[in-house]
Image 1 (cartoon, rainbow, N blue to C red):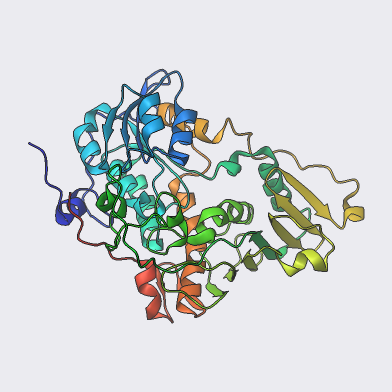
Image 2: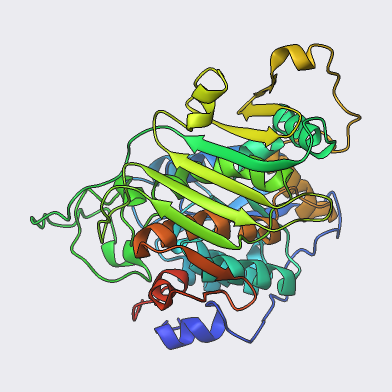
Length: 431
């Protein structure tokens, strides 16, 4: 008999903050056998989801089920993996094929990353989830906690983490080549964001289940400005350009500088819109000392011109990048490259001894870890902290206050208005 999923049932069995942990009897335990076939289900299989599945599908891996609320969006994957069972509702899929799957790849919009991932992990399924890890800080923390308790293998979709040049930049920072680092500038270009809620209400296309697409977020009439892509810049569904591309480039700094939660976060940008993300933003975080690393101020910019430090130090403009401001010099890093400034001071620079092993590939790390128990480089316990820092920038911008962040209690101690953005409520959501 098919279960009827009310919000209460969903919370009891899979949702965030639930005390119960229940595991599938038939899951593949990490390290069981490197030759064991890995059965994977895809949740959100159009666009990025289709790309993720095409990478993980190889010998020793079988795609057993596909879920997408949009039949048109998922059509290519449905055709490519014609043998896989097809669903619109991930809750029903996980309930029905629990014993036939070992892992999930979650590539839905941001607002359903956590509900889908947490339900799967609580069933003992390994999880690969696209970035950003979650839609709010509470979800990100919960995802890491559930992954730890369930002892599942996880990886967030920050693919540049596996790039060899990225790893070299991390090693340069950590070896002390540019001295103590008290400042860091991280930026992405572009002006995407903004917009007003549509006043017209076109009919929902027959290929889309709009209620399932909304998931835990408040109900609103369908409009094509939200799906399949524009959702990124609506606060109810996405996390703006900060969470979209900002997570990728912030990963450089968080990893290299061993950053935990910030002490304070403040932000500026255009006048706050209650529904849509800004077209530009500047966020400033402060961090305490970490081991032998000194206290740090990190500035994040979503703006075409990048940080003023580029122009101050005569460094050529790049669409995105990181400037590590050391007492002995500056390391400029971006996707696939790095350079030290002033150039004349580092003319004879040689890379430090390698301390970070070369990656076998971002998705490959996850596949092999699911089969052998080897660690991944971006598990959810790391991804949760990265996501928390990025999302706190959005919170500070939306409330218009400098946040005093108490990481232990997960509260902005000086700003009660931040709470609804840190721990977002779920709507009554029924199948």
